[in-house]
Image 1 (cartoon, rainbow, N blue to C red):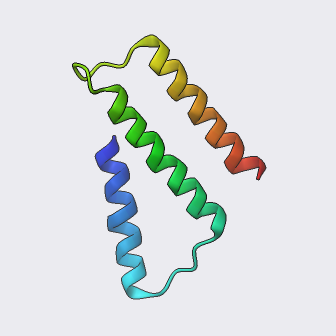
Image 2 (cartoon, helix red, strand yellow; image 1 turned 90 degrees about the vertical axis):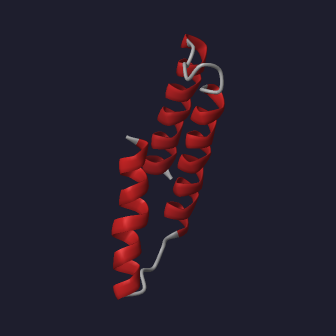
Image 3 (tube, rainbow, N blue to C red; image 1 turned 120 degrees about the vertical axis):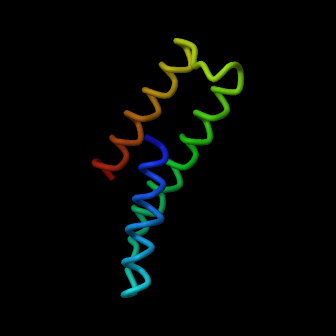
Length: 74
């Protein structure tokens, strides 16, 4: 799942950016930064045996919902 996202970001957008300059809105940049921080948080949570506890899962789902709300409202 993460590998697919990474390929889509770097592969598809990278190829399109090589062909033509792409303007990037500030909202997209902030959303990409938040998504990257969430991926790092997942890796941090999985540091013990590659498992995520129920509490950590609740934190991740809550942050994901907050990021979606931020994306669609602002």
